Length: 134
Image (cartoon, rainbow, N blue to C red):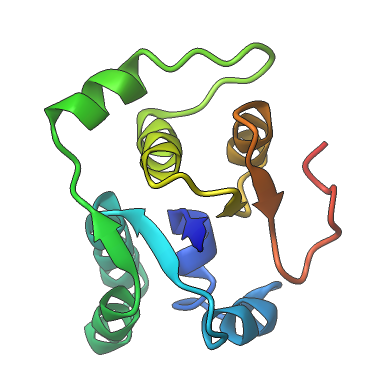
């Protein structure tokens, strides 16, 4: 079981460094989980770049999503991690991954990777050097 954030899912919508590796990872038997925040973030990305919404909807259908409720928002708002700072949306992804007891977080965001590491998760960025975020 693996969690992913918007930076990792975006690789499946926009072709860039890491896209081929993410596609290979995404077609594996690994179950993928994320926050329902991913819906809005990927649709906004598709709107901004003019991508096909169908691609986003097919991607979202393959990811198990945890709803963002008041308790997730409160916990994300209070998240403190020594040595790193994350945005509200990144904190929501981290709290979601924690609640789903994930051991790995797919991300291409440096602060997110550092925060995942601080929380005891293994940051993973297919196609990039293993410890690029350190």
